Length: 203
Image 1 (cartoon, rainbow, N blue to C red):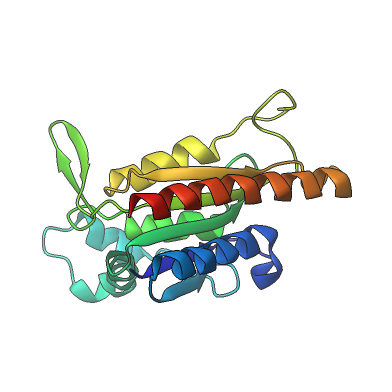
Image 2 (tube, helix red, strand yellow):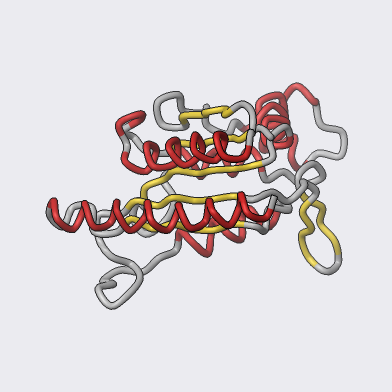
């Protein structure tokens, strides 16, 4: 089993969400005997912006395949893996631009999803996926003071291409003082450990 880890934090390798995801995948590999972990750092090595050629090719009946080269590479990278992990901050209530751009390349009509009379149907194989979200404030629970558009949007976008087995792990209040940050980290580690135990037990 090969895992794909997407890091969308501008802090790169020093990001707490990225560190949490990498530790989880390392433990997952040790316990289950899984293979390679592919890391794609979307913030440190950002994807290029969508071009007019790509936008035109999406709606063309006879598109030039060359315009889909990057999209195809990213979709094939996803197809080659059996486990997906996304480490991301919440930026202005939703996903950061770097992760949104990856989604725009991977969610492609006729390739990763089909348009049917009943709606969009994913064409990729489902696989276990975890999303570790870091936020400075609180968006769920009794301390919530802001809306959360990230979770429903990302769940819907991944479901659109066929990935439905998605579990979210939240680290909230990371800028609410060192004690709050440590509590968030500890709670996330505990939740991930329980999830990992279930994963290994089901194999």
